[in-house]
Amino acid sequence: MRNLFVPDYMFADIYKITPEFIKSLGVRALVLDIDNTLVTYAVAEPTPEVIAWVRGMQESGLSLSIASNNHGPRVEKFNEKLGLYIMCESGKPSRKAVRNACAHFGVKPQEVAVIGDQIFTDVLCASRAGAVAILVTPIPYNENLFFRFKRVCEKPFIRAYRKREEKKLKAQDKSKENSK
Ligand SMILES: [Mg+2]
Image 1: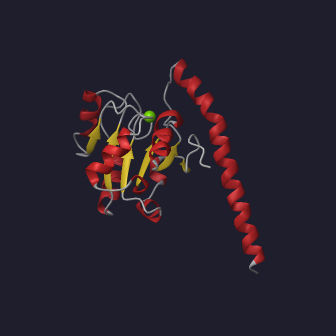
Image 2: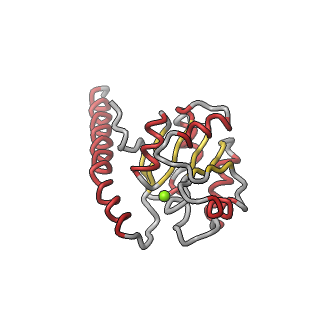
Image 3: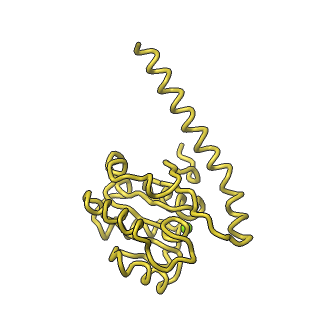
């Protein structure tokens, strides 16, 4: 059974995630977290790199949206140059963000991938909604005690992800050997 806290995929940062990879999953729409995923809390606007990454995804035909638990003014300011469909104070891990994206883009939950840096909000939102959960390593930022505590609590699930991936690789190696 799916462990709701274990991401489907993990990447070091968003730039390692390509449109080809997303499409290979059958995904048609992305729900993006902002803080510590696209930029840190301290950065009000998307960097040129973020804009280029977003445009690359759009040019390949994917629909992009932002779901942030942060407040309206932060999200709206960030989105000025991007012009994406936004969900402010999205209440992740509520499924609402994925449901809204599905309604807005006319896609099914399994055709949505949530990309974020937190297990207890982004990953849980995706897995509860039946969407693909993609975890990125948080952009380093001076996090407060509460966040640091959350990071410690995330560790067992990241270990579970790594274990599962190792198992998958081993199984692949075995089937390769058997087919020789
Ligand atoms: Mg975040």
